[in-house]
Image (cartoon, rainbow, N blue to C red; front, top):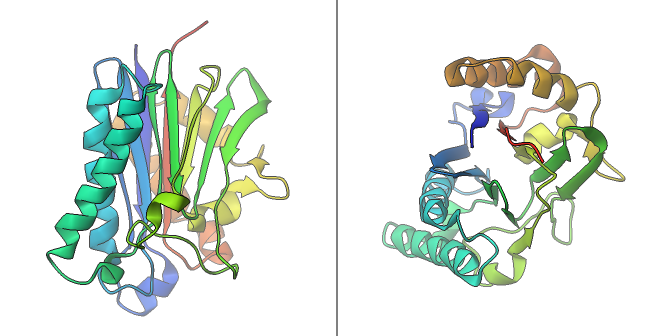
Length: 245
């Protein structure tokens, strides 16, 4: 089965003004018969969050690539949890874990199965491309205050990790950090935007080259319109499974 996909991270204006690097990261790996995609958003308050986000996205994606044929089995969730714990151990050897704070959202997708996982803020949205009113969403989870969230580096991270299986009719997926979510989706309730996600999906679907899709997403995230809405880093990953019922 063929997958179309693309992704990009754009540095936010607030980071540019302070001479900071982008603290978002994403990773996509296509395995025979499946695909895994992760988006991680490093905390601006943590000194090495970019490293934490990049390590987490890579390790989780690589761990789940071998599970794409059994995503509805307990072994897939165990592989996810082990990858998070392994990343924590790796980073802890480099310094205090709170220096590497990051959130996590992602999917592992095959023709018959889809595993959604999410820790902290950001948004995961799956759409039935035949009916955009039919969708599933994993919403951001914030703490006591709107600007606080949960990170994989916290001691009780397992309590904040959300995992669920999505029906196979949701073949188009969007993963985004909270910077992108501020303009890419509607809230109360959370739902797709007809003036952003729909045209993005249609445009990307017509592009045959992955690099062209990545550049198209990056250009969108770097647009003056996006910059006016949020000064935060912005990441968007799009995955489209090309199977039919």
